[in-house]
Amino acid sequence: MKRFHSLSEVCNELAAGTTSCRQLVEYYLGNIERQNPTLNAFLEVWPDEARAQADAVDAKLTAGTAGPLAGMVIGLKDVLAYAGHSLQSSSLMLDGFKSLFTGTAVQRLLDADAILIGRQNCDEFAMGGSNETSYFGPSRNAADPERVPGGSSGGSAVAVQADMCLASIGSDTGGSVRQPAAFCGVIGLKPTYSRISRYGLVAFASSFDQIGPITRSVQDAALLLEVMAGPDGMDSTASQREVPAYSQQLTPAPHYRIGYIADAIDNAGLNPEIKTALETQLDTLRGQGHVVEAVEFPYLDFMIPTYYILTTAEASSNLGRFDGVKYGYRAPDATDLESLYKKSRAQGFGAEVQRRILLGTFVLSANYYDAYYTKAQRVRRLIKEKTDELLRQYDFLVLPTTPTTAFKIGEKQDPVSMYLADIFTVQASLAGVPAISVPVGEDAAGLPIGLQVMAGAFREAELLAFAGVLTEEVVA
Image (cartoon, rainbow, N blue to C red; front, side, top):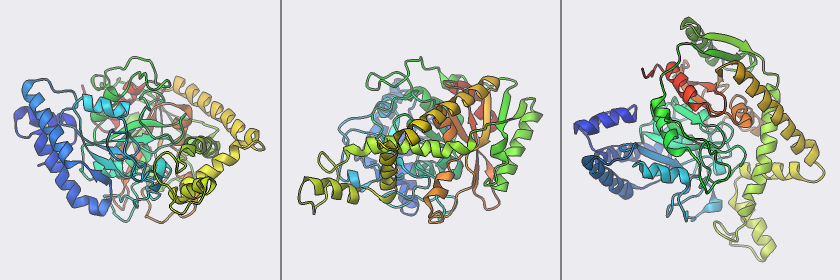
């Protein structure tokens, strides 16, 4: 069977009778069996369930009652609740835990007749930028298995990159969908904060977390967003706004006003090949008649410290529930309640998660709350206001997704250097606006390069249409 680029290609073959959902599932299961031992993208595969779902969808196709995602085989990042299935956040802390319910986004996928094929590897509790903090070991980049796929949704990006599923559903707190999408040469979308319900998503930093799709085509990203988005009575932070028909609104405007952050392109840490690829893309856009102008963003150097102060504070609170008492890992050598708490958390959490909990607890402590947490909230407001101001002047802001292409596994031992790799993705997260990473070529070593685009809040329709221009996937 050939490699499919989008669901529309799958649907054409389903309509022609040249393939079936059952054949699609067998194709992807075969790819997983061959490649996953090396790439470690899937932690668990559900072959019997996927086959049963495929047979049910095939019957619906015959009856003419199939949903909009019929034929789409999807993998789920290991932070999404699916009733009766393991949910570990790639951590020993949740060893043996099975979800008691299905999250809203996952249920909406099932209701639209998507076929769920397995659970995907990620950084532990979504904390990391390389997939190296997973209790199950790192996923590996299909372009070069000695290199990381990015994180925290690394396994999800690799699964799409290596054709082990047509799409994946990940989560993005500070770039965890966009950064691995850039490293793996696929498309990663972070919607506006609140656009997709977080009910059923294991919380890392609640005011940042967003569920987002990883795909090969803009059209598929639009359709998945359309299916998953919308109000939810189980999540009071989910937006009440009506959900546009994103998949039907991909026709771009003839001309756009595009701003690019000059300090990002001139950043000393930016790989020269990424800079060249970005400048080439900007020149192409100018040649197409778009207005392309440099803009100044004075808070670039403040974004990483602001992001990490706020997210670690929220993480220290959210992860307080994992204590060895109610569910998950319990230290076998505990002798009393206090030692149960201490040993379970010390043994169950990995080093990076412990580091973030400790940092978050520190910045929330009485002596340092105002000096760090309160000040970071004020800076976040400045970043949001400046970002919103620029997005009122321009249709989109363009910048690199990552400062480098995929680095080698084990290369970044210093946590600070790993944190600095998020420098271009955290802005959209701090401001709560939608952003997408699209592939724009490769470096000399054949490693993918990603370009990132931000738009104003709830302007995903325009963002996706413009992403179609960048990928030359324009729908007339």
